[in-house]
Length: 379
Image (cartoon, rainbow, N blue to C red; front, side, top):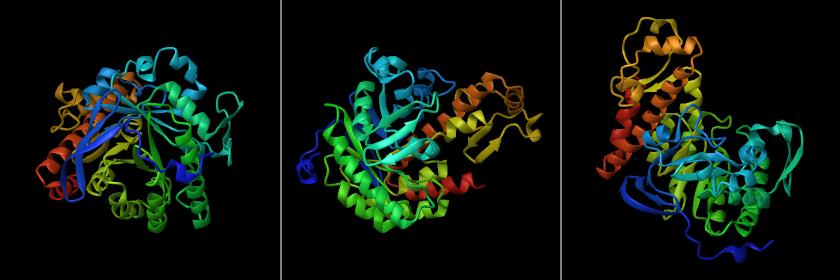
């Protein structure tokens, strides 16, 4: 393995972020990748298995998304990275013409902790499909992501739970740093790689890890290890202190977070990129996000409700006049159309939030706009 000092070099620009406007700490710009220019701030719908559940690629793009996130661990197991590579890239495989980020598999070691054994070599998984043993090392993660051909590969990291003791968080940071060096040494030519900052809600540890990883030639940086069991107020407080300290010349990505209010807080702290399962998973569970909060469509109060989900929304679900009563009927009866219509709506709401945030930043009024938005959501 190369020494850290050998990796401190001018970075190879494979995902170049350029600022277009600033309002307070919030930023808007463009992230240039091999497959698309992605306006930021941007929300990435989650396409774990190379598919945003219930939607076609055209429908996902119509929500404003120009980048999705897919999962290395799941595609490694099924159908296999080599199968995807025979199609060209994961873009060709999924017929998604825009940018793709691939998560490294580190979060799966957290979420499937009972099936993963951690060592300095990597994670030894017992496959949740057939129980077979597989080693996901930093080198293997980069090899798989290279075969998938994503625009941005994430380094393999260690994600401690939000309740972890400080010594466990420190150990996770140190191993994540060592793995960062190994991932950079094994990167696929032309593929961007983002480093992942750990540290839980300990601001001192987060800032120290930023200082360490910033010396390495990453194309961007992500904040990992949030929304993993810590109090939400602690997450927000940490974000506001940590995010502005990430390198200003590269994209800043908050992984796996969160609600519209979480995104407003993070954008106010200078975060550019987001992903989260909430808009799609919650839609399948009957929850719709609104400009005035959220509703659970299965509740009996919507049995005769002729109103659309959100009168302010321009998504196909609301624009075509599907009523809350009809959407409740579809959901209660288990009709796939109900999942599709709710998912379309939620992704449009997130996409609209990003577009409105960018407009507020360009007008240099982000903070006042975000505060009004949050008050409306809490009404």
